[in-house]
Length: 344
Ligand SMILES: NC(=O)c1ccc[n+]([C@@H]2O[C@H](COP(=O)([O-])OP(=O)(O)OC[C@H]3O[C@@H](n4cnc5c(N)ncnc54)[C@H](OP(=O)(O)O)[C@@H]3O)[C@@H](O)[C@H]2O)c1
Image (tube, rainbow, N blue to C red):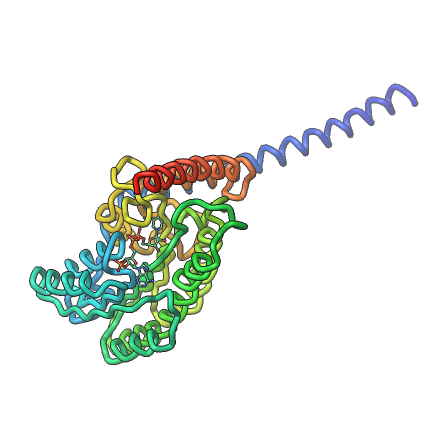
């Protein structure tokens, strides 16, 4: 090959490398720009926008909000803060005495109407759904909060999960949530159609347990991941009916389910968590990549954002860390149970 031919070949190779470098540079610019835009959206949603106005959902106009799992924890706070916004309530939960106490408290404190229904949702009986239908069919409902949920009593390997616990988790978190929504959503749609400039809202409690595959909470994790797909699909279907559908993602919150009593930067109490949720409905906050999904509490939102932008929720490293975390909780829970058994 002559010297001129060799030079020509080299310059062809250089052109290829040069082209490749330009493509990598362009990808870098696109990635960097989207990261900057998503960070700006996160900050705007979490810290800059004013709280959502609930008059579009009929606040203070005699409209009803249905809350499941309303007698304790996050559900009780949803009921309290929706009542404070001027909604009448339908409270569905297990323990009648707790519901009666809430009815008395809210009616006195907020001057609203409160209907209550005590049922065991884990039984999945037709009677339960008939009771809900009977109670709700003639009420002007605009909001449904699918809050009721159950997790494992302690982290447990899937193969050792008791059948009753497995069935209860799927029945409460999935079957009942879907069937209750099938009863209430048409009522919301009817109310919205009959009321000028009104919208409906369906919130469903998801969890970081469903966002990130969670070893030793496998059934709970799967049940909450199911709610993500279902709720976001429903969001697409009900858009035409002016009903906003949102899955609410949460890391830990103090409650009897989480068995955590002390709050911290990462673990708010139900009051702070629900305040963030209701203020931000319709905004993704930490769930920047997910339509119809919100991670409303600021530290949870930043935590999710960092995981999504680095390793990703399905990575092996996140799965391994999650496994170690829940394994240590299991070890502590088993030790505590052994101590209690010794005392008896
Ligand atoms: N707490 C957390 O760290 C956390 C994190 C992420 C997501 N979440 C989700 O948030 C939601 C609420 O959790 P939470 O921590 O507030 O729970 P919680 O404090 O244990 O309250 C659960 C509520 O659901 C009711 N309930 C439970 N089983 C029932 C059944 N079989 N039939 C009827 N009602 C039943 C309870 O009624 P009684 O009062 O009568 O028992 C109570 O009102 C759940 O969907 C959960 O998965 C919680």
